[in-house]
Length: 149
Ligand code: IDP
Image (tube, rainbow, N blue to C red):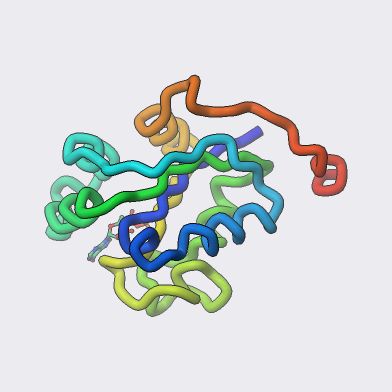
């Protein structure tokens, strides 16, 4: 089964949108296998956004990510990496489609509420960066036969 890394960024936590975000992944049919509220270190934030190190928004992004608690999660399911990106919506909430998390709940690219891995390989790297193996729980929800043919 595929897994992806999802983070509810500090703006999502401050705006009390944790339950709203989790609801969207749960009701879709994905399985939560890891969850923690974290005050992120600068080192972890910089490692996570390493590909953006040279971008003009990098410093502000890292400062924002470490400014308040964040919720880190791992979700599992068939095709969950790409599907989670669809559920999350485009990077800029102003142009993100209605029905997506960013499209429904945000207005600013620098406060776009949520992170989701952009590819299967990225998900593997991010899960290993954010979670220890023993923090992830492998389990089969009893609903599985009603979700998958
Ligand atoms: P993604 O989160 O949709 O995958 P990326 O292009 O990987 O988007 O950018 C990572 C994060 O960096 C975005 O979610 C957003 O928080 C921030 N970001 C991207 N572009 C800008 C920008 O132009 N201004 C401010 N922040 C940005």
